Picture 1 (cartoon, rainbow, N blue to C red):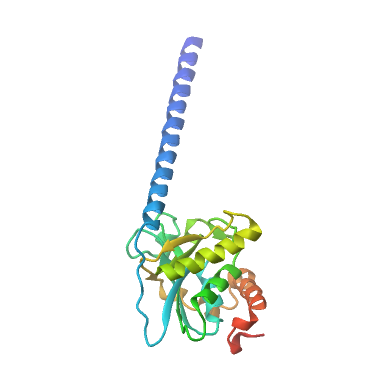
Picture 2: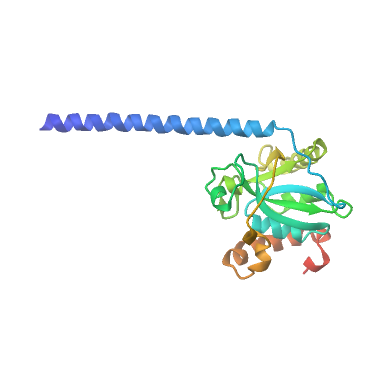
Length: 233
């Protein structure tokens, strides 16, 4: 009887050890795949989005798109801010799919702006000035790769602006501590209709009251010179 128990324990121990090895190998494989995907993204040629009626486009990811959309819509020269998805590798991402963290996409915004009133450089200042620049894979309570910070560039001039601002920030916080990825823009997928202007349409939502509005107010207090007149308090 004791010999049978010993044999069973030995079998279970071996099985458990093999399972751990399998899990470790799977994790290493997933990590390698993600690193390969990230490298492939960085090496892509950026897509330049054609302007329309004097307006140009810019793309940013910085946590929940409800928050980011509202921040940019308060900036002078910004005509429209659209919530959606970018930075991933699947076609036609949805909110539900993106939230699994398996599509590679992050919640992002498309900014339509007048370059005569606000520059791309200003928009980058708004980006870094309205987030926790050292938080990896999220902003505030929103955690996960779908909430990671990404700043997209469409040409070399934009990349140089971004790189220069990151270099200045890292003189203060330490090299390598800016969490935002810098990626060549590929495609923006517009989000579902119920996400658009979410903060405006749902002012009493608990998340909006507890997270989004405080983040917006904090930004507005830092950048009063960039605000639209009707956004000043």
